[in-house]
Image (cartoon, rainbow, N blue to C red; front, side, top):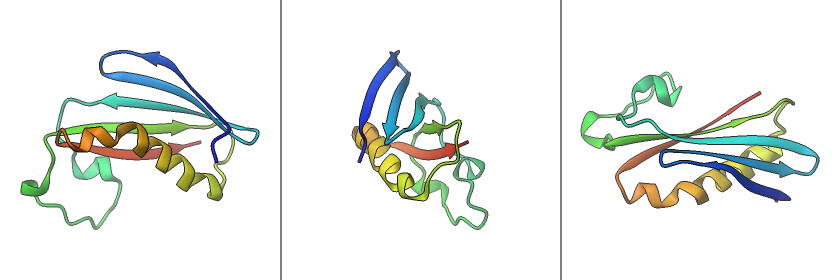
Amino acid sequence: MIDYFKRKIRLRDFEVWDVRIGNQNYALAILDEFRPATFDDFEIPDLIYEEDDQRANYVSATYFSDEAVKDEHKEILREFALMLTDHLALAHCEVIIKIYQ
């Protein structure tokens, strides 16, 4: 469960959110890349992905943390990012979520 979240920056194609679960803080950056996603964006080595299936635009949702990300937080963070970007799927956007320490 997310204990706190607040949007810190909102521009036309870029947002930054502060997110806290328990005593651990995360920064979430959502960026419209203005291009289709590539194989490298997915970070899955054996991905089978045909160009016909590719969405027209790639939006990255990237979490950053100063501490090691707890396993139990990963699904919560993923669901939160999807909640914020769910409307983009209707606009033919590919949303890829990544987490970095």
